[in-house]
Image (tube, rainbow, N blue to C red; front, side, top):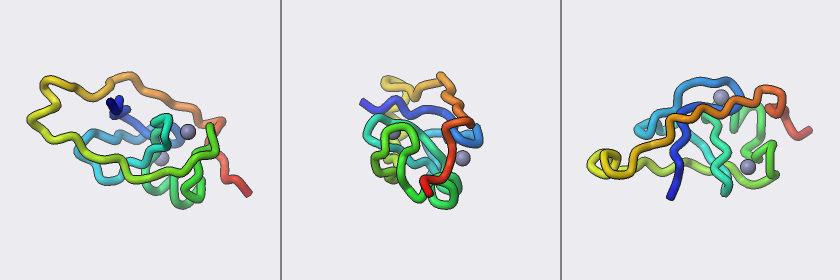
Length: 82
Ligand SMILES: [Zn+2]
Ligand SMILES: [Zn+2]
């Protein structure tokens, strides 16, 4: 199950479950759309995998399967690949 992390690892902006701006890799490293596209060229800086749109969890499921509240913030790892 996805953790649905609450923020972008690069810029620390909030990315709630409902956001359409969240991008994740297969390990669920989580970034906002701006960082993923402009800084990272849609490649995860941690694992080298693709960053894709994070699916939103239906609201009625969130009560039983809540989103993670543990923020991951690694600005030092946020660099363009080239
Ligand atoms: Zn960001
Ligand atoms: Zn990754």
